[in-house]
Structures are given as structure tokens and as C-alpha cells.
Image 1 (cartoon, rainbow, N blue to C red):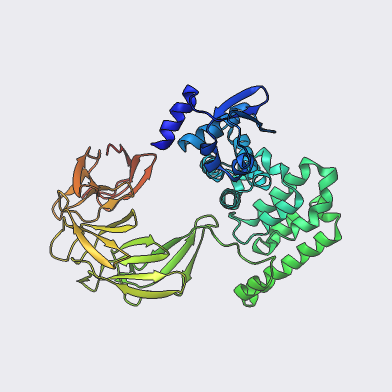
Image 2: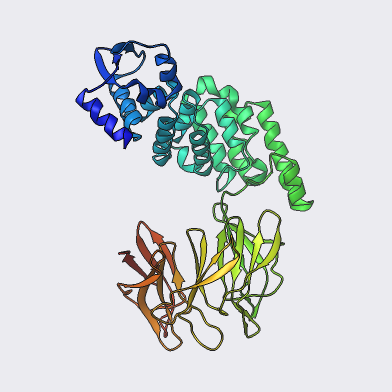
Length: 475
């Protein structure tokens, strides 16, 4: 309220006690408002006693100062793609933390493969640890998309070495890293060819193949003319041989030329049915490397047709059944300690249950208790370790699917396959029927992209479905 009143007075030119001047543009202001905005203005006005005194602000554009003054009075920032960098630089110079944070958030929201390198380098000029970390992570996670961009070619050899040397670099295979090096060198070959050995030493050639090294790396003219590069290639081929015969994982971890990259995301497959029976195995799949491995953190008991959720570093396995017994139990795997913990059980036994995470809660919807299909629903709060029943759905459902847009779609009621859709509104604890799917189906996959449901595959009671329904969410 105070800020609104003072801003109205400023716009009307009333009771202003100082003037900020940039170039030939003057801005009447109230010193007390600017004084609260920044240590720069506190120092500027500290010894001022004369009303109407003019203060010259150097190295600032009038349009930028106007935005800064408006922020001081209103607390809001008018930033655009055209002015945000200059505004952030000026705010950094004047030590206006609120504007720096607002600009950092704005730039971070517009980060993409074409500008992420420039944003990361920009934080060398205008410091923002939050924005710098976000840009760095983006480059690491989207490296394949960043390499074709023009800004990639502006990296220094030291900067490029940092990125390709990271274990977290997200690439499908190391040939992408080698090709990136060649592209970077080819941009200014006379200056950059001397860096081939330094850069090649960061490529995990031991993760490729002898055939790739013999046909793609060694014949390259830069590698062929550099003794250190040839040694790296030969050493990598020796590593590949050792890993195929002697302790492959140990060999790889000991040598940077063969140490696996750490995936930034992976899929876990827990339990399920195997050769007609339930199992307790867990597999991890790296979608970038297209590689699947068994991991040692097996579930204590077999479990199939259960729900899974990831929340706060834990993988939850919810309900399901084994040996004709349906569960209401819930266990979770702590990925930091590799230990299993049992948490509070659900109110109902639920096999073929639909599970999702929304606003820090886990939702378990429908399913079967072994005798009846269910329309009940409940949610789990990890802070209190409690399940709470929520409003029941309109229809009995199992073999259904649900999304993070709170949608609950299709399913099977024990008698017929369903095409209807309903959505849960947590604020009012109510369900809403939405437009039905084109096809009735159960046991399908559901994804959401840009407020549209993509309902993939499933079973209609007679045959397997190979089509996709696309539904627009009208919540």
C-alpha cells in the first residue's frame, strides 16, 4: 500500500525530494524509497540534506533506470529478452538483489540449446550462482543438442575441457564427444589444432570399440600426426581388451578413459512377473545409452501388478500381489543408502492400482483387492507417514492409468472395459468426468504433453490395441 501511494505521488511529481539524472533524462524520486532498494542508493543519499538535489548516475541507460525506479516503488520488474541482460548488469552494478534474482529467473526460464553457453559465460560478467548452475547443468544434460549451436564454437579450450571431462555428461556414446571436439577445432583450425591431445584425453574411448578407434579415431589426421593422441588411442584399445576379459567394472572405474558416464536420469523396473511367477528383481535402464542392467537392491518379497512412484529420493512400491495374495503394504528404496524401508500401509489392498505424484503426495487410485474392483482412492503424506482416504471415483477401476495433471483415465471394472475419463481436484476433493476416449481400453500407457493426454495401446476386451487416443485436458 505504501509503495502504491508513493508511486502515485512520483508519477504526479508530488513531494519528490531528489532527481536522478541519466544522460539528459531526469527522474524525480523520493529518496526514502530508493534508499530501501539498494546499498548503492544508501551510500549515494547518506550525506544528502538538500531537497531537489540532482544525482548523476553513470554507465546506465535511461530506459534501464526507469525500470529500476519502478521496481523500487512497486516491487515488480518489467524484463524482456531485449533488455534483461543490460538490466541484470546494471542491477549487479547497483547491488539491487531483487532485480538480479528476477532477471536470473527470467533468463533461466528461456534457456535453450542455442543460448545456454552464452548464458553460462554471461554469469562470468554478472554473477548469479543460481543461473550459472542452471546453465551448466543444461549444457551437461543437453550436450548433443548444444554441440550444433553456434555458441558452442565460442567456448574456450579450458571451458570445453571442463564439460567433456564431467562424469555427468549426457551422451548416448563417446563418438558424439569425439565429433564435438572435431567440430570445435574445425571452427578455427590454425589456433585450435594444438589442443587435440588435451581434449582427446577427456573422451572415454575405452567405452567405444576397437573397431571404432581403428576406423574413426586413429585415421583422423589430427590424431595421426600427434604422438600423444596415438598413445591415448592405443591405451584405450588395451583398456577395451582388459574390460572384456578381466574385472570390467573395476578396470573402467580406475581409468578415466573407460569410466562410465553417470546418466542424468534412468528408469527402474521393479518386480513383476517372470516365466509365469512373480519376482523381486530390479533393473535399471539408461535411455540415452540404451543399456539395461540388473541392480543388487532386490525387494525383500516378490511383488507384481503394483504401483510405483518416485518422491524425495525414494522409490515407492505400492500394493500389488504375489501368490494369490493382494497387498496393502508399501515399501520404499532409499537410493542414497540402498536400503529398503516399510512405510505405513494403505487402507485397502490394491493390485492393478494406478499411482501418481502430485504436490508432494502419492496418490493410489482404484485397483482390485482380489475379490472386488475398487473405486476408492487415497493419498500418502511422507512427512506424517500416513495414508488418507480421498473422495471415491465415479466408477470402479483397475488396470487404468493416471497422470500428474490429476487425470484418471479408462480402466476395467471387472465386467467391461472403459472409455471414460475423470479428473481429481485436490482443492475441493472432488472428481470431474471429462470427455471420453475414442476407444475403450485397459492396461494402457498414458503420457501428457502440453496439456494433452496421449493414451497409448492397451486391450479392449477382444484384441490388443495399437492406436493412440489424444485428448485435450479441460480441467
